[in-house]
Length: 215
Image (cartoon, rainbow, N blue to C red; front, side, top):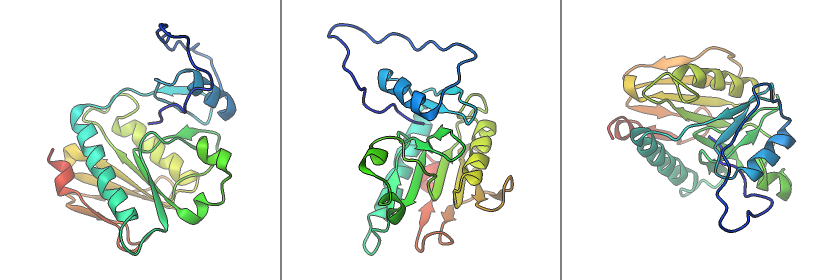
């Protein structure tokens, strides 16, 4: 999920933010989407390739706890001794993909050399690239933008836009779907998974899932 960038202008003191109301046929460019985010800093939004807004809902307690623990482990690996070639991002980061969408993986990794090719302005905004690794954590329900069906569509979209590896974690099933670049629409499923290994992308990358399944 993506939290909006800091607003371009401040709101007068004492005024509460107005609710976000959207016409059904609204279509936005990535640039217009960024402006919408700037004036709705409390909203959690994504943008489809067709220009439609996706309004995300807050996570439940279990999902939030799992996401935080995963993020801690991923950051510890990225910042660990002998590494430094990767940057980890949380769920507040929106990436502008080549198809015009702006999506926010729950967690992601990007090679530092790719990050350094971006201008300071691009880094402050929605980075115009797809992360190398994307991780999505499914909720207990299949309804809404955090459900398994919606997340599988996002995994396909990440694949199509250049992600090299994707992990869709399914806590209720203790399973992981591994989505690889170059295998559009196909995923390897690991049943009763206790850990997930990303050495095909980054040597030494491995996450213990036992501590994620049990919250």
